[in-house]
Image (cartoon, rainbow, N blue to C red):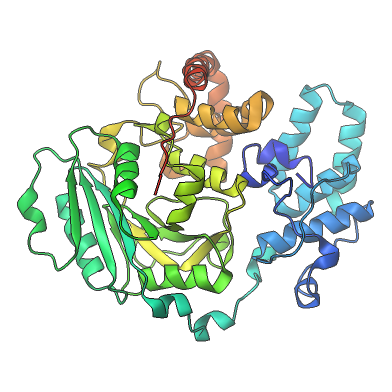
Length: 444
C-alpha cells in the first residue's frame, strides 16, 4: 500500500494487495494526463516528495480516475510524520488517534509516534469527494455493444419472496434492452410454479430443494445462454434503462465488470463515493454485470461461503487480483428493499458481525476465512480490532460515529465474551482453510 498506515484502517481492502501480474491499482503520477493533475490538490505539508506523489495517486483513484496507464509496482517507505499527515487529511481525528494507540501498544517508539502525531496536527481535512472527476462523454456516448443487443442472462435466486419477486419481474418486463433470459433458482417452500406463468419474459425456472445461495448462483451460471451474466436480487427495484446502462458501462470503459449501486429507499441519497464512476472495490451480487468469460477464467463462487457472508466480496477480490477491470456504475442503480423475511435471512447469518446468540462466532467464520486466506494472520487481527468493537452497536447505528465510540467502550465490559466469540470464529475459519476453497469451474 502506498501509505503504510492504511493497513490499520483498511487492513482487508482490495487495493492493499498487488495483482497477480505484480502491479497495484494506483496510477503513476508522472503518467497522469495534465487535465487530471489540474484537478488534484498538492499537499505542501508533506516532508517527503514521494509522499506528495503517492497522495496525488491516491486522490486520482478516489476521485474516479479510470485509465490504462502504468501503475506502481512497489512503494518507498515514508517518514512517520507523513503517514500521520495523510491520515489527518482523509480520516476523522478519532481514527488518527486510534492508529496512534495501536502504534504505541505495538511497541513502536512512543516519543517518536506522539511527536509525529502532534506535528501533523496542522493538516486540514480534505473534502475531495465534493469534486470527483466527471465523464461528460457518457451521456452522448453511442454504445456499439448496446446496438448489438447482446443476449444477457439475468440470475435471480429466490426464497419465500413471491410478493417482492412479482415487482422484480414486472420491472424486467419494462426493460428497454429486450434480449435477455431470466434464470430463477427458486428454493421456496411451498414452491409455487404457477406464479411464473403470466410474465412476458424468457424464464428458465429451476426448483432447488437445498437452501443454498452460492449453489443456486453457480448452477444458474452453468446453464446460462448469454455471454453476459447479470446478477440480481429478489427484493430489488430497477428503472427501465438498467440493463442498457450496465452494458453501456462495459463498452464506455472497455471494462469486464459493471458494479451497480444500491440504495435502500426511493429518493435516498447515494453515498458520495458511489455517486460517480470509479474503479470499484467491491462486487454486489444483487446488482452486477460480468462478462461470462470471467467465470471461465477464474471459476465460480466459492461454496465455503454457503449460508454465511462475503462470497461476493471474495469473488470481487479474486477478479481484481486477476486483472479484471471493475467499474462502479452510478447509472445502473437499484433500490434494495432489504425486506425482513425470506432470502439469506432464512439461510443463515445475514449480518456478518452481529451474532444473535452470546456464544455464536463473531464475526461469522466465512469473514475470517476470507481475510486469512488473502491477507494473512496479521492483517486479519487488525481487521478484528477495527470491526469487532463497532459491531457491539446495532446495525442501524453503524454510521453514527458517537455510537461507534460507545461500542468501543461497551466492548471493554464484554471483553471476555467477545474474545470467546472471536476464538470460536477463528477456529471455524481454520477448519475452512484446511478444507480449502470449493470453487467449481465453468468449462464452456
